[in-house]
Image (cartoon, rainbow, N blue to C red; front, side, top):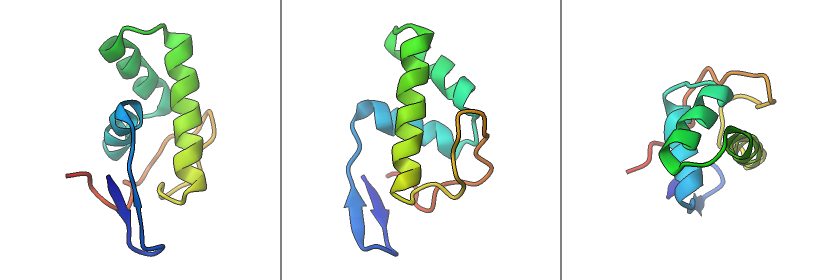
Length: 84
């Protein structure tokens, strides 16, 4: 779960989104996150890349990322709240 204190919302992530979120906090670029996801969940890289791109776009739309995410951008700041 992630608390958004500005909007007074709590976001609950599924397993995949939590995995991606934790790697975002480490400032990994989307391609690195996709490779890690592919290895961890034994899925093909194309599917993992699609999931990462989609999840990052959703996190961005929710205002949970400190920067705007595009398929070729690299997060440079941590999201506002750490996971427990």
